[in-house]
Image 1 (spheres, one colour):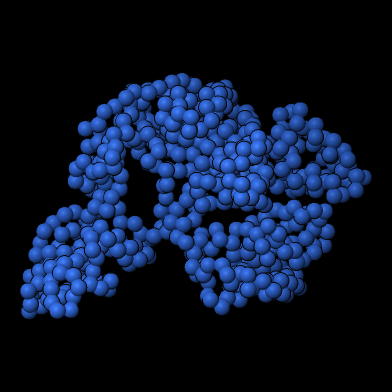
Image 2 (image 1 turned 30 degrees about the vertical axis):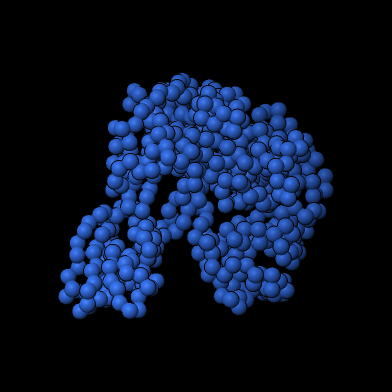
Length: 551
């Protein structure tokens, strides 16, 4: 069993076939935080293997959205005979590949993709089919009718990806099919992106450390389980965690056995010495890192998904609520590994923050919109392969529409955040920051502005310019071991750490220099609530603002 060829195991009554697919095995294991036993059986893998529906005439397939465990649970409720048949086939198939599966990691990395929200993306195909008024017709007539919908604004890719043409081609041309049956054939799940971000699970102590200098009395050594009772020893509490009360202690002690005369150690919230490397840590930073790891484990029951950021230092200084948003095609049947993230099939990534214009209006600012996937496909088409050993890039949907799709979703997200507008970096700003090493100039000079103009026309928005006052890069705010630090261009802290990022940003603003930039913006504060977003194309304002689904 390998990731490129799922093993087909069961034939369906309608001529289709079911397959077992492990392309999402690692991602599912990380999402579920599932620790596998060393001697795992096929049933230990049941929640990590996808059930896919194979095409009857080719090796193409679609994800059913269910793992083996979920599929079997459904069969058990409705069909005992089908359940037993599937169970036997699954067991015999996977048992042949247990040796290969046993070589996969037993413990998952604490790094996975989590869905932020479910955007109301809708296909325009069901509505257009209903407008034809055709209630019952032959397969050939339906094929002709569906293809003619592209002249009414339906995108050819949307029609092809829906699966309805493939389903009709598999039937005799004279067969009679109802409109209800046609609507049931539509399945665009493989091209509906998830609105997600990379994250890790745990309790993250964000308050940081504060400095202090308090000597621990000798009478407390025994209670705290510290070395040196009755001899010349000194233990100083030098750092204390602001919210959880854990301490980092500097110890000075010597005898005939110990190799070092001073070291750093960690005390828990009760002031007790916890199990740690002997005799201790060489630096306070190492002790803090160890303490934070232990706090995360201790308070794991309070844990939740924590959004990760990888590229914040490449954003404009300042701004609030920085977030890296991934538009991920989780159900796409092929696997693409992007250069910037660990998540498979990232169609687009967008780096965002909330900023204030000089007039005091809040905007969702897009530092970057980028598609590694389509960039790689474009490079391969031009014969520009930077990594000769890298496997060829699988095809991806939205070849021409991914910038428009990104802007549509960002308008919806900006409205959810309650800001006044959606702004993004201009071509001149990207050129001044990155020169020839930046993103494609045509994307920011032509493609994104064109998408914005189309959206402004469709939704009656104002496409304008906004002025931002931005701190230069000589003063950056970074998270350090002891709190939030303001650093200079040489990455050296210029003052003591602050407890919160807001305090550090405020101080950086006081001592930093500012420059003014003009950026394009779509003002959305007068836009009624968005209830639906066309998956392809622009649609009409009524389609965006009408509640309910057209499916």
